[in-house]
Amino acid sequence: MKLTEVTFDDARPFDGYGPGFFRIGGDVVEGALILHPGALSSWGGLSDVAALAALAEEVDVIFIGTGAEIAHIPADLRAAVEDAGMGVEAMNTPAACRTYNVLVGEGRRVAAAVLPVA
Image (cartoon, rainbow, N blue to C red; front, side, top):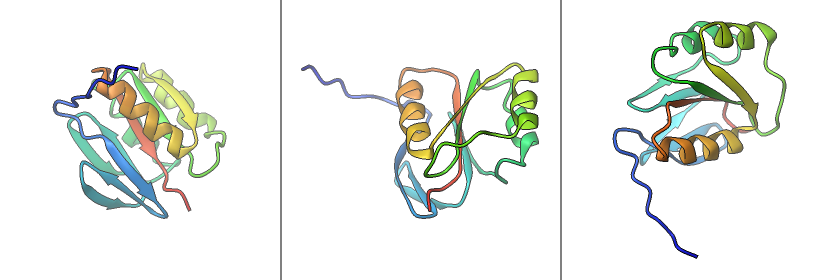
């Protein structure tokens, strides 16, 4: 198998996560957050619809990490993101982190809004 080193350019990848925190680009960040190329911000969780809709000019798809287990996201959150012209995919947080890393490594316009695992 041939392995290729991934370069993230201006994006910072998820390096890891644990109970209540994420490691991003070597820094530990506690609590829910939004990560996309060029920016990292805290996130108010599934009720913080405005923070996600504001990403419409910067990303095409947002991965919602729902914690340790996959869960449905609120209908108003899904509708707001889709109405802003973005796709939205809900998955557990570990899968959202991995998926974000793969696609941002390919240069895609993606974001991850993730709740920490317990």
